[in-house]
Image (tube, rainbow, N blue to C red; front, side, top):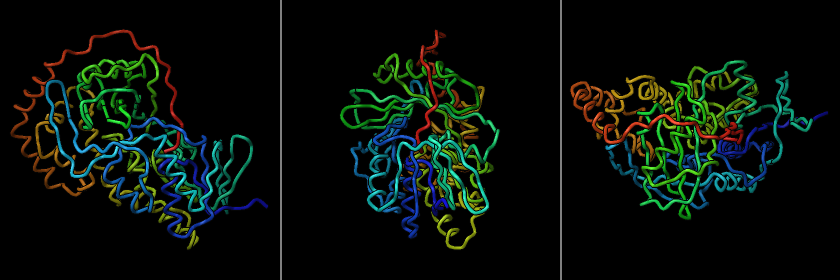
Length: 419
């Protein structure tokens, strides 16, 4: 008879390793983590570990022991406007190839079994267990299966069926660059050319930069067009994108109404949904992992493995409240048409709004708990909207619109790396 493991985790990125660490804290030892690739393996990602990630690492008894660049300031830019905000605690910018391998080594040191080169082909939920089928024909069975396998998650597909929401699109490239300082740059200038999101330039160890952009799915844009925007607007930062090499991948924004669990099944990380406003995934994954690990451990102890309360538990947790707020803000800020300028002028020209978000990124505030300050900012904006829109138009006039041109010759395949 095939052995039934307590928990099978699909994916050994931050979501999967954090969930394994949480289960280990609860005394759950019969855990198998399945990873598609061998380590060290890379994943396209901005690599910024926010304050919430620092808190999650500490809560899980994990340590940050890889090269990183502490960035204590952020520059927010749109055309001729730029503002620098100071964060109460630096954001550590890491390389995922280092960070993910370190997390795997840490959970292995605790005795957690991690099987690499083990891509999952599908799963079947049965009365007493879930059967997980691997690409090579082998199968494992688990009382609980947790999908931490990224945007292309087989567990997510099982939960969502044929639903096909539009994904966010991200592109990134790490390359040598002589940046002026260690500030993180968030550039919204490409929004005048149709991007619904932002371009980033983050400092990386050894004189390198992590550059990329995020596009919110309020409008459809193909990979070549997004790459053209990235290449054109990086010039303002003294960075030249190579003709080939930028990696693109889809991700799903968090939706509090979307299925994240079923009997014997849970999802975390990109499989459950990222931050729709910023595209942040690492801290989100590690915070969700604590909720999932707590619920799975309790279910194993009680035999209650329906997980009907998981979606509500996520929504009520700090991470869920932040994600729900950012989902609402993203729909305003990244809307199709000229309406985005009304909300962008609020974000850029109200110092308190930028300070609130800087504190949220630093981990010193929960933005969802600042509703009074947010409403106050909206009231102020009602009286200042006209003048702020004028300032925004002046800022955009400082940079000419990107002329139409041929799309970059770049083939893009979705990343299947784990969250």
